[in-house]
Image 1 (cartoon, helix red, strand yellow):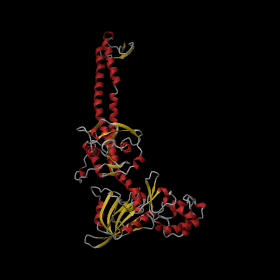
Image 2: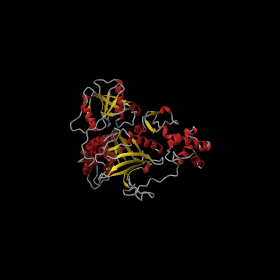
Image 3: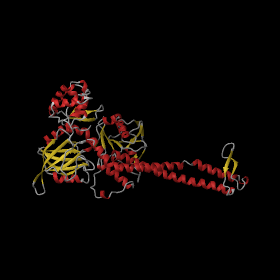
Length: 582
């Protein structure tokens, strides 16, 4: 779903129409590669998102409010100093390619007028956000590029800005049909590939659509068409592109947004396309959830690694302890050998290396070869076997105690790992971090002690097909609060014998069958059994759920439960009202 120059051109015009003449009220930096400008324009507030994310670089208006970091990065502080209060004088695309300039009228510390430019280079893995002054000198950038990283240009404070190297391609809105046809003449393969190779800013998806509109076949080969006629059609189409603006959202068969286009795609099924008020709205539908997940994934990366290592250590320790416990057969063998020697002391000559005795522990008393230490008396050999048995038994008993503690630790760690995967905002992440700090799994970061206190996180709220609310906790702390606050006559659900979310049906007494079925699905989906089939889910009234004193977060015991098996199904979860927070 990469954004090409054609799409960026529509976004630039959309942003220019809305923001020209507006003033920057606030500057935020949700993550390392994104900037959010809150702009007041024509008595309305707009959010302008500029992203240099290597997987989805773009510039757009957004209705989303991404979380603001507790400590603003240095680039954000710089932008606040230079751009807060600045007037936007234009948003322009350069040569139809993937570089967008946002122009600002600013003032210096003495109130003297000046200008700054915020340049969004949406060029894939080399994407960047660069602030320059009126002279074109770089003030700073999201990503610094030095001479060892690029032979073509440096992107460093104090350097004159140089645009990315130009490709040998035609500008889309000024290219002549003859020039396009001449590019086709030296090309081969599919027409769509020739279009993207010949014209700047045309990505594969846009090229297929242009090929379809030009010759009626998105997969046409250049050797099978009239190249000049195709170039004429394409040239005329490119001239009309700005007037085709009719934003549309492409859906998959499950109704999930998978791509956004500036105009209806004649080459794709109409049934899978949904019109939108603006291209930015369509982009929000495609990217908002993905951006939030990737942002949280980056923030949780270090914790995930720490947890994974701790889980691996606990699993290895559990395996060792289980092996020690499993040595009961060896303990019994040693004990039996000692008893055989004791019962036959009079028959064993001193200094013998071994002796064959009838094993009365087994039916028919078969002969058993008993190894002996030649340096010990028969009685001392018996005591040697008894001592080895006692030593192994003590180790086994200790391992059994340690195993229970290790199992509790492993359950805690796997629960926190699931909580971490479920985190969607900073409050939830901090709750998980606090649990791990209290458990000694991670150390307290001194810089976080002075961080602002975040409000308690909130669980998901779904609406069942019967119109009944279903609440789903995402972290252990949420689970505790959710269960504690529920009415005793409401139904409580949890995946059986595995980490997962506490689920509450906001209905007094027995819930309707459809609501119960949907709540069972949610309990299975938001559990460690998500990728399994036939996940058992327990449900009972909330009044039968108790939290033992001193138990870890999210841990409860319950009675009077019934159990149903559910196979988690993403489509069934998506069919419910999208998850929201209370």
